Length: 90
Ligand SMILES: [Zn+2]
Ligand SMILES: [Zn+2]
Image 1 (tube, rainbow, N blue to C red):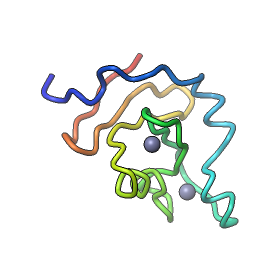
Image 2 (spheres, rainbow, N blue to C red; image 1 turned 180 degrees about the horizontal axis):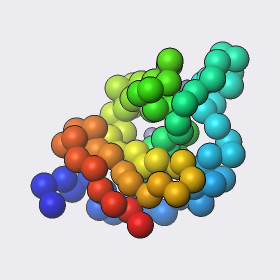
Image 3 (cartoon, protein in one colour; image 1 turned 90 degrees about the horizontal axis):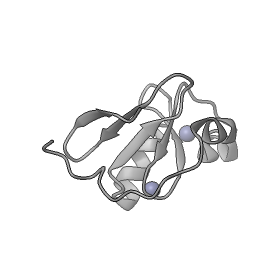
Image 4 (cartoon, helix red, strand yellow; image 1 turned 90 degrees about the vertical axis):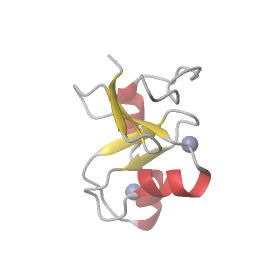
């Protein structure tokens, strides 16, 4: 695989726990989201690019954590912002 950003990641908690937490920044703003993504480096939960505030992508630009996963029910893919590759994390 061309992307090495998924190597040596610490395991995160279950995705349904992250899903239940919701987008921290949207909750603070009183906004809403479409889908939830979780940073695989620090566990930050943010909203997807279809959401008005795009907090998952904003987190990447803010702290350069490049890999996320979907925490939507029945989804198990990850995405690397740097290499723009999608991986199956199942
Ligand atoms: Zn958000
Ligand atoms: Zn992060």
